[in-house]
Each structure stands twice: as structure tokens, then as C-alpha cells.
Length: 256
Ligand SMILES: Nc1ncnc2c1ncn2[C@@H]1O[C@H](COP(=O)(O)OP(=O)(O)OP(=O)(O)O)[C@@H](O)[C@H]1O
Image (cartoon, rainbow, N blue to C red; front, side, top):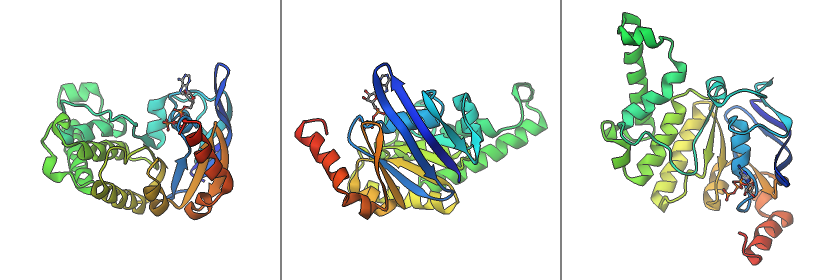
């Protein structure tokens, strides 16, 4: 198994945001993590990517525990992520943003860069080439030299994913990638995520757009108040009475 969460919990003071969660993602699988607002989904991402330490349980990547590892180390081990609110280097071009994503994989150090050694120049060429390939993969080749801040919103979302892919992950965590996209943009995002999976990368995706979840995910896990209340194929989960209750119950109380 590529990613395993075993009895993972996260408490913030008296609040249990994630409660004894078991979750697995296999290589090349697309898994949806859904649930009402405040269910604990983003906290799960923060735990996997090392931004928060779990209060209990363990997270394993290819069988090895990630406990106590810093976020940059977890990225280097093969876990990439995007954020709900886009976090790009605004003044860098699209290409440069992706190049920046690759630095956790480069071999030459700061001194070699300073003296512009042959090894450094060769590596920089490779980084640039690979960044160009990733830009093409997410359909942004025409925007190569445009500053990130000047890109249309939908393109910024794609660029963020491309930058995450630049770290050469085994798994990518996407936090609401379709937020703010129109229908056509959301369609092409789905195609892009399928292409990512075809390269063997696993995808764990938080998404409120149920059409996207239904058509894209192999499997869906549903969180409610930090607990996993259902898991299975999209169709099975959609028809699960407890899932329906979780969503509708919150709607009635104005929490959804
Ligand atoms: N750093 C923190 N300190 C204290 N409480 C937090 C922290 N992060 C999250 N929480 C709380 O934990 C709970 C779960 O939040 P989380 O953001 O993980 O939910 P979510 O399912 O991602 O929601 P949404 O769909 O709105 O993004 C919420 O009650 C939230 O207020």
C-alpha cells in the first residue's frame, strides 16, 4: 500500500478534528475525501504532509512511518499537495514556478550554483526541460513566460498542480482543486487528473463538487465530525443513509 493512515487522530484542545481515522491509498488510485464543512478533511492533509503532528496513530508511506518528519522531508519522500487557497510565487513566471518545485530533487548545491559549474548548468537545463514538459501536461505551454499573478484563475489552479508534480510525487493531495472553476474548466481539470493517474501517481482529493467526485474517484471516504462514516465506490457512498443524514443534517442546522 502506498499511503496508510492507521488510527490517526488530531485534537485541538477539546476539539477532536480527526478521530481514529483509517485510510489507505494504493499506487495509481484516485480516492475522494468528502464530508461537510469542518469535518476534518484539510486537517487530514495537514497531518499527511507533516504541517501538523498527529495526536495519535501513525501515517505510513510505502510501509515506512512519516512520524516526526518535517514537511520538506515528506515532500522529498514523495507526497505533494496543493492548498485550498492558491499559493504560487506570484512574480515568477509559470515556468519558473514549476522549476522552483523541482529543487527538492536537484543534486547540485549552492556553491555549484554560485560558480555556475558544468554540473549545475547541466542540471539547470534538465530542470528547465522537465518544467516545460509539465507545463505542456497541464495545458499551460502558451503561458510559459507569463507571471503567475497575471494568469487567469483556472490556469493558476493548474499551475499549482504542475508545481506539485514537479516534486515527482508518488501521491498528490489536492485540496478542493475545482473551487471557483466553471463547468468547462472543471471538465478539463478532471481530464488532467486522469492523465496524472495514468503516469502511476496516486491522487487523494478533497472536493465539494459531487459531479466531479462521482465521475473521477475510484473510491470515496466520507468524514463527519472527524470520523469516517462511510467508504466505498462513489455510487455506494452516495446512497448511504448515514452520509445523506450527515449532509442534510448539517444543512438543516445551517452548518453545511
Ligand atoms: N489549527 C487549528 N486549530 C484549532 N482548530 C482547528 C485548526 N485547524 C482546524 N481546526 C478545526 O478542526 C475542525 C476541522 O477543520 P478542517 O479545516 O480540517 O475541516 P474541513 O473538512 O477541511 O472543512 P472545509 O470543508 O470547510 O475546508 C474544524 O472544527 C476547525 O475549526
